[in-house]
Structure formats: structure tokens, C-alpha cells
Length: 335
Image (cartoon, helix red, strand yellow):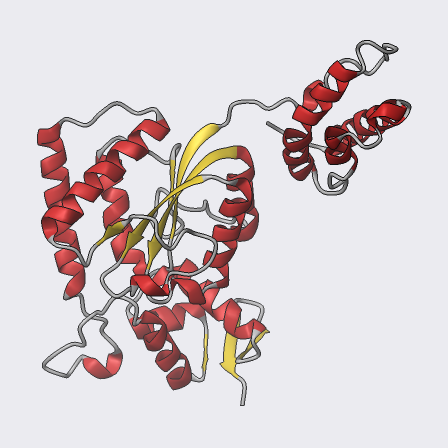
């Protein structure tokens, strides 16, 4: 549903007329529904106002019934059609830290094999399911939460709660009261789960044995397919898809991060879920001054969005200084 300033004006016009009408009845002044109506928040964008309307409309309808024996008013019609809710398309939103790009890529591949497409699945780190070229990251994420019926899959890793972006996504999901499921990676201590999600909620924990993980993943699969309105997956096909997924996770456990200084060494450093931020910090201080492309080359890491987010956070904290040239943007460590 497209919202604009005219809809906000229409809402305020309806609310003000209803308020004046209800205020004219002395017997309503201490009525609980009247108090709910008059004490509702009155400011916000059209999306917020729609949420407020959903909250106060039951009280509005009760008050209208209570005044039916009194005088009729010209505001008896329900609020403006523009505020009427339309059914939104379902979208599974994978919320994760950029360090988990390999894990969520394997997860997206599994869901894609089960029938999910870019139309009903979003993951900012996976090509084909992420943000289009030249789109604003923050604005695109905001529109997803506004325009779609969201179901969030949280991928909790040890660094998830250090990310302002991840916490903002969690906060938006909590405000909208959307459904969610939790996946816990092998490096995450479940007792460290924080924020507005339930700490006692059952989850898919990859620290459990393989049969427990498989059982939970089947439950998650069924829940997501039902949410998106997709058909069930043939169990034979599922077994094949899940085997591919499991093999990809095994590869992640031994994936190396190759730096220039490591190329001549006999053993490359093993990839450990959650240690990527440390590798980025080391590379930044080693280079001193760099572009994102140079940082990608130094790390052997291609996830531009993850690096851009991390660099932006370091600039905001005053650790890095951003400098622009005619051709591209460069960064240097603040001394």
C-alpha cells in the first residue's frame, strides 16, 4: 500500500472529528474506551498512524455503539479508506551479521531449493536476494518492513549484538510484532542472547547433535513454507537439498582467509565463525590508508556490504577518517 501526506491529513481529520463528537457526551468522559482513544499517540508518519489506528479502532467502534442511542453524527463512517489495511505480500527476512555471509549463503541456497525466490526471501549478503545496485541500504530495509508482511529469521552469532544494524532490525521487528525464529551458530553462547527476543524461546542450535538440528530445520522449513504460502517439499528432494546444505557448512569450518603475508606460508589460517571483524581491523591498521576495494584485496573477502557497514561504523566512532577524491572514496586511520 502506498502512503503519502494526504493519507496522514485524512487520518488527522477523522480523529479530530471523532474526538469532538465523543467529547460532547458527558457520560463518556470517564469511559475506559474514551480514555484509550484520547490518550493515543497523535504524531508520526502514515505507517505509524496506521498502527495507532489499529490500536484505537476497537475503542472507536465501542464508543460509536454507546452513542447510538444518542444523536447520530456525520462521522459514523469508519475512517478514511486510505487507512484501510491491505493484505501485504509475505517476506522472510534473514537478519544476520556480515561475518556470517557463508552460513547465510548456504541457508539461502537451501530455502531457494525449497521454492523461495527474491519475491519472498531477503538476505542482504546474498546476491540475487539482496539490495539492488545503487539502492540506499537503510531506506531499502525500512521499505521492506513497511511494505511486506515480515517473518524474521535471526542468525545469532557471537558478534550479532555488537551490530547497530542488527539491533535496529530487531527493534523494528519487535515494534511491528512480527513472527520470528532463531538460528544459533556454533560460536554463540545462548545465554548471551539479548535484546527484545525471548531468551527462553526454542531455536535451531547448530551446537546440538545432527539429528536434533535436522529435526529443528524441518520444523523451520515447514513454518516458513506455510508463512509464504508455498507448497510442501518432497521429502526425497529435501534430503538431497539438506545434504548439500550440510556439506556447505562443513566447508565453512575449514575455509581459509588468505592475506598477502600468508601466501608463502605452508598453512593458511582457518576460518572461525565470528572472527572476521578482528581480521578486518588487522587489515585496516596494516594498510593505514585504503579504499574498500584495496581492503577487499587485502582480506580476500568479497562482501562489499559488510565491509562498507563496518567502515561506516568506524568513521562514525572517529576511528577512521573518510576522504573523497574525484575517482573514489578513501579512508585512513585517525592518528
